[in-house]
Length: 352
Image (cartoon, rainbow, N blue to C red; front, side):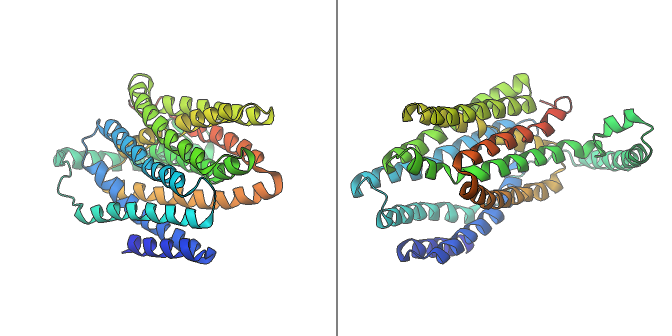
């Protein structure tokens, strides 16, 4: 119902050129994604045996990225037919076509059921929960004493920054995801403006970039999964984020030194391919480290991550207005490096 309403309002906003209606439609889509992502992620994780989630989360993300090429492909074809120019009418037609594609995804949600949840050994699960409860109480007492008196450094180190040991992995992973989401949200919405205003790219070239970007991320998702099994999931996430940040800095420097537009575009594609290819690993880390009955709650934190995108995008707009678009790219790079710090702490704690 929410998704269908968002579809109708978006189509209306596109052709009426109403900025207020467009804002309402985006808010409705945000509510829709917040509702569906929480339940779908939890249902998906519950349907996979432990130890296999990295693989299936990777396959899911690869299919998602493949789906992300459908919109830009349609845009490329339609702009080629309608005229390779940024006009309100042409953009409205392209947006409407994209909304029609979304309807198929909304209809599929009506057929999802929780009949395929993997049932693990219940007695073992109960025993694990009892053990975790006892360990949690013991560790909380030890951590409190360590934090208050600072007389037992070994216990403090074991409990990791005053977090219970069994909560350290999911909490720090979520913190890393939220920081990375804030960093990405500050600049993601402004790449298109950078392409149009700074690089003077046509609609067809921008659409081509948004086709190649998800395809590159598909490849890197698979490489990240394979590498994570050999090197470690946290280690690979950190390495990929650092490489992505390095390419972003190179992209900025290439623009400032007036290198050819094609070089800047290639650096952008490399940056997005590396920086956005690790969400499958962080999600599998979270789902592997929390009890099944809490996965819905932890999946709900994805909504917080999406909200952080909106807030950071607004902050990014203010910074772009006052400091310029390149400044926001620098801030994004710095925050993405900071986002890897919680994962570095987990190098020895996450099972691969």
